[in-house]
Structure formats: structure tokens, C-alpha cells
Image (cartoon, rainbow, N blue to C red; front, side, top):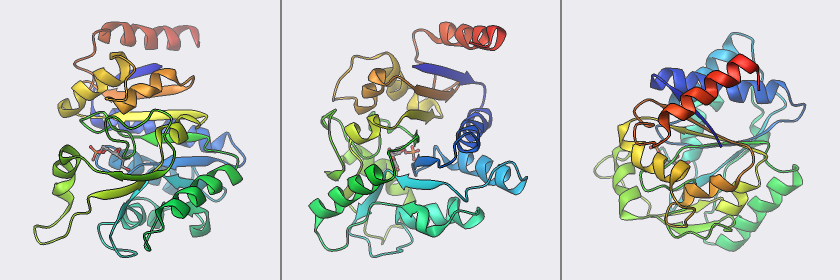
Length: 259
Ligand code: F6R
């Protein structure tokens, strides 16, 4: 695991934006896995800026989102499809036919899940997967005790996740308690992974992901088994890491010796 610690949210997000830009620019047919939520918002702003400055085009990029709520009608304001349109897709040159977001409007969960997996496979697999992390250690909507081998399927959201995400819903709005999510096994097949953690409220989950035991109780800890996982953090999110100074030193050496 590469752990990059930067002073502020903006610097960590700019690093993530540059990382994704480099991946897209260095690949003929980039396949990018995307996340929603608060942690990735500044990263999406960085990508939009790169596009506007002519440093990046999404013309050949195919995207697969990690998850979508179940029980919301198509294009509901709180759907992750709507989030992605508003926060990224409406501002860049991506072909809408190249955008995949899990969806299930008819309770045929199994076929929606297997179709999603089949689509990822048909395109040759995800090249770079962007992740946030829940304060309970979830990645995608793989809640604690999800199988570390799990595939795309329906998950029931924990009370913790529902209360953290309640901020996005108005008091009268119905907040779904189910989601269709890529599994941990699905995520682990991405060739590269970039997880971004921002803020003090993520510091415990980040420490569990990076330094805790490999455990289904902290789904993000599965990334310890990935060969190309980069964790980018602001200082606050990194503040519970035992080897904080070591990670800073490692990055200095990487710059000095280009290794
Ligand atoms: C959403 C997703 C989730 C979020 C996580 C953190 O697509 O995959 O795992 O990344 O819940 O959410 P924020 O960033 O809102 O704290």
C-alpha cells in the first residue's frame, strides 16, 4: 500500500485528480470506477478543471460507479446517477453511453447484479477504481461483515451509514435503506485502486484500513491484499496512523530517488 499524506483536503483532492488524469492520459481505453459522497467532491472539481484547461478528455473513458440506492425512481434527485451528472458528467466530454451505474427498478436484483458484473468483464475490467471510506470502514456499500470475496449484490445499509448519509436527504424525503453495490471481490479486481480519506472523522476508519487486522469487520482492510492500492489522506484523516512519520519519509524517498 502506498500512503500519501498531504496537509489539506484540497491538496489531497488535487493529488487524486492528478492521479486519475495521469491514468486516463496514459491509457487508450481507460476504464474508471467512480464513487459518490462527500470525500470525492473536490477530486471531481479537480477533474473538471483539468478538462476545462485542456489537460484531459473523457472521450474514450468508460466509467462504472460503485453503487446506487434501491427504491428511488429513475433520475430521482437523491440518486447516485443524478449526483454523478451534477458533480461530474454534466461538466465534461464523457459519452453518456460510456457511463454505467448499477440500477434496479423492478426488484430483479440478481439479474441487475450479474448484468453489472458482465458489463465490467465485457470491457476488460476496471483499470482504476476511486474509493471513499465510510466511518465504519465500508468501501462501496460493503458494510462490516461483508464477505471479502463478495460480488455485486444488494446490501442492507447499517444504521451508521444511514445516519451519516441522512444529511443529503430533506426531512420529508424517504431515505432508502438498500443499495446495489459492487462487492469487495469486484473492487479488488480493479488493476489500480485509489482511496481518498478526508477529515478527522475518518481517522479511525483509515487506521483500521491501513494498519488494522485484515478483517471483514473493516471491509476496507481488504485493500491490504491489493498490489496497487494508493491511499491519499489529508493530515486529519491520517492522524491515527501509527506509522505516520514513516509514510511521510517514504514519499520523500520516492521523490528523491524516483522509485
Ligand atoms: C459511495 C461510496 C461510499 C462512500 C463512503 C464515504 O459511492 O462508495 O463508500 O465513499 O460512504 O462517504 P463520504 O465521502 O460521504 O464520507
